[in-house]
Image 1 (cartoon, rainbow, N blue to C red):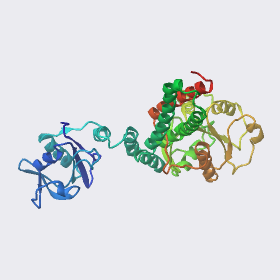
Image 2 (cartoon, rainbow, N blue to C red):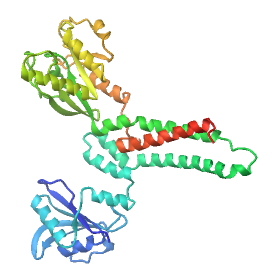
Image 3 (tube, rainbow, N blue to C red):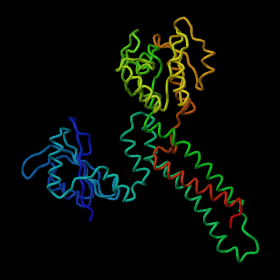
Length: 417
């Protein structure tokens, strides 16, 4: 018999309500030993999923005033008997109720053990179980929808569809191996080739979603780079819609990375405001410049800022060399000032798009946000009822299947016996 597990199901801290959850064959009997319902009625399956009011006792000592919900298998999260005790949300209340359960036969659940039991008991498939943690960790509306789709089984259904087609193809191949000796003609392979090609197309579409899925799940790592005093910190403040970074006319104000998170159209941006990239003898600033270059090389996206009121120079050349190696968006800042930079000459040196903004006057920021969305999601983030690859394990397994199927198709077309 599986042991009955118990854990505090809500985050620790002060709150109006906290929940202690039990799962297992003896969970109901364990709670009966410590719970005294006010109506004093016997607890049985006729009261499935009904809330009962009463008190928790440790021997004869009152612990807390609670509501308790008894849920009987198999219609529960784990497909075992589950009991949830709704206590007051203070950490002392929760711990005392938890200890009372442990004293009466329950054991402390491991991390994720409720979901593990839901998977082992067939309540969730593995992709749905992984979707639970994604849902808990979701930081934006888009990542929440993506995780919810996975939890509802959209990815699992798509993989099952693929599996059915593979089994259909396999049955034809096995049939041809077993029975063609008794037949005067070989079985036609046109149908197998068409089915395989169609399946490969579907699998490739799903694999191509892995980059978008990763972004929805983990967000975009964005670095703002440029030479000193071009408006990097001002841009950060405009994107965040708050004065987070110090802005002055003195070059080199920012000497260390400033890291902030912001939601952009449902996507989480993890933004690094970096020190201005230039040659310097200042030891502290030099470290900041090295960190800036490192941040730009590990970023998913670089926002490369140029001051349109200043001439192009060697410092800009070095920054372009860095930015051309990564996915980048060029930003011509300070368009509210007199134009000095020769934009046509700049365009010849870069391989990324250019936008004009004024961070001071908050002009062009919306266009920048639209450009980021266009670059990674073709302008529209579609998540509703859509299967997406958000997990490296899923991506690797699907790619492996795709490669084997490609090899099979090549063999079929080359008449490999």
